[in-house]
Amino acid sequence: ALAHNGQGIVATHGLEPLLGKYYRSFCRKCQFLANEDYPLLECPRCKQPMIIGVWDRLREIKDSTAKAQKRPPYRSHVPLLMLPGVGPKFYGELTKKLGTEREIMYTVALETIADVAGTALARQIEAVRLGNLPMLPGGGGKYGRVTKVK
Image (cartoon, rainbow, N blue to C red; front, side, top):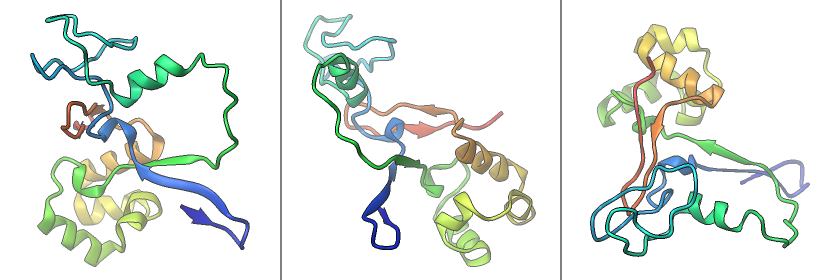
């Protein structure tokens, strides 16, 4: 959470929901991960109840008549280590040369990143900044993952 001049919380930052371990519903019996455009409460393969994921639960309750509280915006974060090609050693080199992870992901010029780490990583970070990074959703206790930008 970020506070600004004593005004309270102005934004909350957290893991990109798609990358969470329980984003989509999952069938424990047959290992089916939901990918439909509607909430799945029962497995279409074996008819067992699904472990309900965040996405499916939100769709299930979105028509609720309960009034939503006014909240500060949520800003999704994709950890640098979740980008393809970034392991612990490379991460250490990047932070040594370019600054903190937050600086690398959101403020360091893309040209600078490309000079230090290559254009492929710069394109991945640009996709994070623009909100169009390709990801496979998590579910059933397994984290989602980032796929390569084309």
